[in-house]
Image 1 (cartoon, one colour):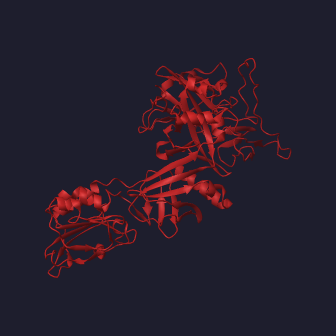
Image 2 (cartoon, rainbow, N blue to C red):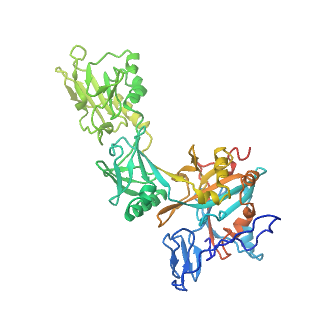
Image 3 (cartoon, rainbow, N blue to C red):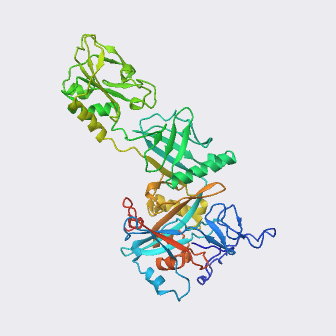
Length: 535
């Protein structure tokens, strides 16, 4: 466990200042509150400044009072490329003394390009001017590197949820609720997915205390890959969890659409040819009609004379055939024939074979026109069923994707350099690789450092909270040593990887703490091996 003291000051041994250099400023917390019991310790890792009784944890459950000493409860997480999948190890940091045990010394016998220190469990830079707890030097492919590692306290952060489903979850801009509190809203639908925006500074700090607390709890749970129940005003009830299929109104989703109705018609047109006289793919957005569609016309299919409700877009493509809902193709339909206005008697014929299917193939029905040109349900032929199954085969599994979006503000940047704008510029110049828990992070264009990361690519339990309320998330900045020096980095606090493995965070006082080795996820690139870092 990474241990803190009341002062949370700089290391015991400081390099001798160079002539003319500014003096080191020791980081001391405010004087002890005279009304605070002598058995309590004050934590200064965030603005809350919890006063923690012996044997208890602070409000964030990340720090505790162990016999009058403030300790970090959870371990620092390190990624290791040589671990087998799922092989995690929890081991103590070595003692600071020169007489470390042989076992502890043997534990450090790793090549420098096998280990990456993440911000998970590393501690913060609060009250902002402190250098990051880990500023780690290593060498990769002959290049001297530095990784600046910290936990960020994010008030400006949110989650973006991509929910793979054709079901209508609720109107755009509708409130999303958790435990009765508004925690976000429905945003624009994307191809085969419904999108939600959850959390954000206005929900965390701009509403009632309960709204802020529930928003923070929701973000913590989803970020840590746990399930959460949500309700959408005027829409559906959901259970969502990163990497799992969403549950919509009590029904677990199975498939993500292969395409819109028009795309489905076009993709499978040749397979429908000669097996059906007309195919209608029902879709809330773009319903496709095979014989009118360019795909059917290129195959020289005979016009069926079908008349479809809704607004015609281009040949064989219809908008607004029904209201959105949880039925066929994301509409409110239980009976697909409701979108058929009728048939042109000069074109249609008795015996015409009609397939109606949804964009996932989950809804399907086979009809044959009688002498009055009324569709009559019939058993679906094996050849048509095979094509419908092919539609389903081409649908990817329905999943919930949770993206963490956060703004890396002053405190994070000050932990890297005393001139924070230099870090921002170097990131925009692609000279600094930004990761979150070792996972690749996308940095948004424009001002500031706005990062976005898929929580499924991060180690388990990557996120924490503080009751301000805010989310605690790991962030790492990796760059070449010469670039770190050029941007005005805290060079006096650069330590070797071996030293960081031996001693833990620079502001710990030497009592045993814990680190947890985790394997690098197969989907993630090695954080220190990304161009242009090695270029």
